[in-house]
Image (cartoon, rainbow, N blue to C red; front, side, top):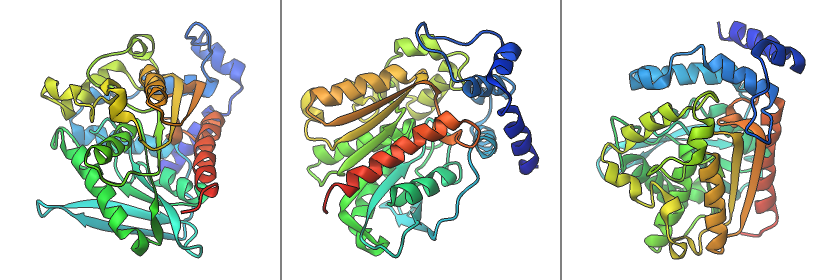
Length: 348
């Protein structure tokens, strides 16, 4: 069934751009930029699906995983993949998955990856193909973290799991075939929030920091709604209503939303000073666009070296649309190239 769905989707996304515009009307615009035609097609496909916020979390997770498999590329082969469990003080475990596409090299950099999904949906499986590509093309060991999800596990569960995973990977880096002095954190959407929050917490607790952070269309402020919510929060796959559902699930206590670990955009410059260099990407038709843009500027103001990539014609979630949208593939490749270049230019 998945193969049939992929074949149908591949055919639909290969039709000429002018046909897409004829079928779906005028090109969506933000006043200055036009949306990628395949992204426009994805937006109209999303309208046919149940709204995530109307579903129980378990069903929302299943729907998300099914749709990712249609839009994402088939998983590429990676030499070594291993599932492990990180023990926690509460006697439970955090599942992680290691990817090493180049095990013969040894002492590779490590990227700890936190999946997106509003801290409510998403898993090792939803981001498996993306993590394989990252390991292969950026020539790093990827450690994907299956942190606890809301609403079953609200704040601070995901943040605690993310930081514990970071500490564990640092202490186990050599066992993984990597170096504890070459560890980066990365994530998409809410996973980007976890990645930068790990950096902030490590600084606050005077622990060794990651050497790099990669934030793909990140969440950076759950305490308020930016202008992008209004401009892009209705018809571009990720909606403002879904974001509000995610935020309520993770922080039922509204006062928690002002913590800088949940809203790093509220941090003072001194709290961000000394954080690792950052790669921040934003998409033009994304309700989180302004958050990512403002956070990249805030980091720069604090003296952090930032590479901000803006993809004006793309939508939120593009790294999981690379199987059908060539422009999304190129944007993801920019991320891979940046990580590869960062570690290639340094000795650890």
